Image 1 (tube, rainbow, N blue to C red):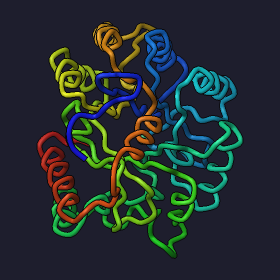
Image 2 (tube, rainbow, N blue to C red):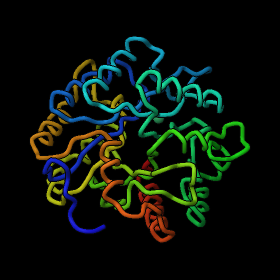
Image 3 (cartoon, rainbow, N blue to C red):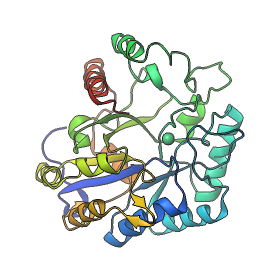
Length: 310
Ligand SMILES: [Zn+2]
């Protein structure tokens, strides 16, 4: 796999977004999607298919809210992807995870293509220290003062929170590392890859860091857009569209300006799973080698240590 990618439809580069649904309401995200829709950009919005028991540390609407559900169905009908941010916004048992996956399929007609763990949900899969391997796990544990060692257990067979088999059977893509550069594919050229040390995930993808409106706008600054275009790369932004993109009903003007500029370029603006399906088909062996794993993990830990990236 080398050289410049020939993007579909004669496009010059690819751009998409995985929107983590934390704190999302109709008030704080609908204007974002109205803009993306008008500009012809199609991205991925994650949801929680069911409402869990208990109070979430970080909440937001679930598909049990009828108006919100109707809006997400409308988004899907207009070409956006609905992805999964887990069963719901609180820790869920295996039975709840299974129920949520089936509910997702009833609502949207298919199982989730793309999934990302929700911070704080203990059924998260290969999360916390288990995102990384060997000496990198030791470093991660030291950085987090050994506070997360046995927290996340979705991949541990025999644990009541285990759902790795369901993940492997039903979900194509799971997100792990996040990098600073706009060109996600340059940071993780093998994506979507399979990691033989993490067998319950079919394929992993990486993303570019844009957790809130300030970080997103910084990553999408004009010179970075131009560099992504010139390099023929691919960007998967990881963000929370509920984090400051809309204030008092008004869309952030800088965000609007940057998206309008990007949309004038000859980019392939498709949802995360569409982009990853294309990359899977063109790639060779998806198996991550030990040296590739070390490089991905090291670069991620360095950026995490410097700026606390997710
Ligand atoms: Zn989340």
